[in-house]
Image: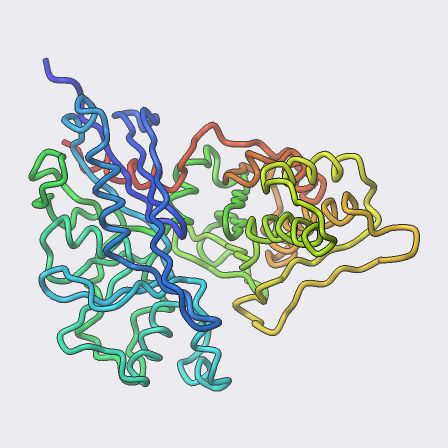
Length: 425
């Protein structure tokens, strides 16, 4: 008797590629990840990555799976950094770098985003495409894709990528934008649809079904929430996301809050500040730079992060830190603010504690109050929360709810694997 098939999910993140395998019940049976080292240096405000390095990283991860697991894979799901965009040709060769969600080039012309219509922010795929078209960056015969949609198209031998409602929304919608030929846009499909079969030789059984790529936020929620109507999802990785699943149209969003598709009957209210775990690393790196400026040999970043935890847990709440160090999509002019400084405070532990609390208070302030009604706990994920007791403690204090770290790792990849599992006969 053959062992039951496994679903595999591939998550193309900002700094790494991750995969997860789930069995027929959706339980996680294996995970792996690898930095893709794909960042391309560029002008200030330009954030680009090499798609070839990302593709190679994803294939390497799959090929390095134990053979007994690889041979049991019976469906593939895809997710990743859903706002970004890459151009490719009909043969699946990249024609541009991946322009990531962090990119700010569309802010170089103050009136540009406003000319594209409402609810379009820097880093959104359709805004980036319109900017590229205006500045002559649209090669002949180009097709546009999310990076995970591009990966799916490559592995499925498709001339054009597919995009589901979660990713399409993250691009700012697929309505025509000035200078952007609608023919270059991905083909729209339903969430969880079968979009093709594996034809690429990557070490997995050929012919297995490929599921429609979906946004990493929704994929993570599918992996972590057991009772979406009563739980909040809080992720702290490079960025930050606080999400609440609600019935469609049941809540009015506030500035900084996005309404994203979730499933046929529900949508997700999402607060996604730009400075999440990256702000926590900024504090560690700043402390190290101060030591260097004083002529001292700084400890390693890991040592500094551990010390920030220790000092912050022992400190009192005497400062208020709003860590909007990268601005926000709804207001790029915002900056970080540290309040309450006096001669009697300002110790490193107090700053660390204030920053840790601010990383929860900013997304909390972006969600409407109604989104918190009836919630009984916060399901937390992300390496920053797993590694820092202080970050978890401050999130619990700010939300006034139990914060439960999910047992699931590589959440987005696991959510994508569960979507793939539904296609397995």
